[in-house]
Amino acid sequence: MKPIYIERSPTGAKAFAQKMMPAWGWKSEEQWECLDALWTKESNWRPDAYNKKPVYQNGKKLNAGVIPQILGLDPKISVEEQVTRGFEYLRTRYSDPCSAWRFWRINFWY
Image (cartoon, rainbow, N blue to C red; front, side, top):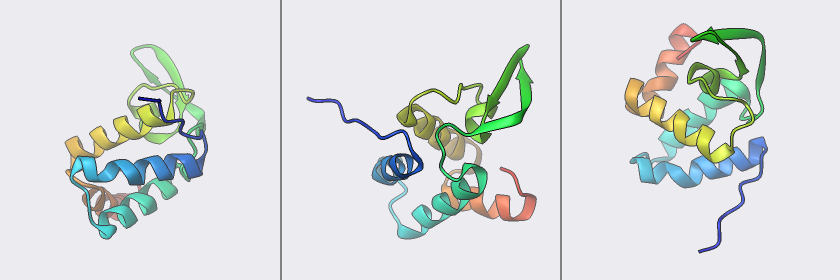
């Protein structure tokens, strides 16, 4: 089976995430709209999002954007890995994108 190339761009990240959502049990249009709103607010879907103010984890300086930074990931990791780890975070902490989006609208973070 030939590997699928995911464009390293906001468009590529969105397309990959939308394609993968059903595998995570998030099949409704509403769940997609929540994820799109949430990740648009957080990083505008940029796989190379970079925070000027670093976060330090375990003595390591991290400047990746948003969830990749929280998870200790480098902004250079693949789109597939970023989306997968983001989905794992959403499921573990909120169960689904709409629950995370509701939290974000109240707290401006998730």
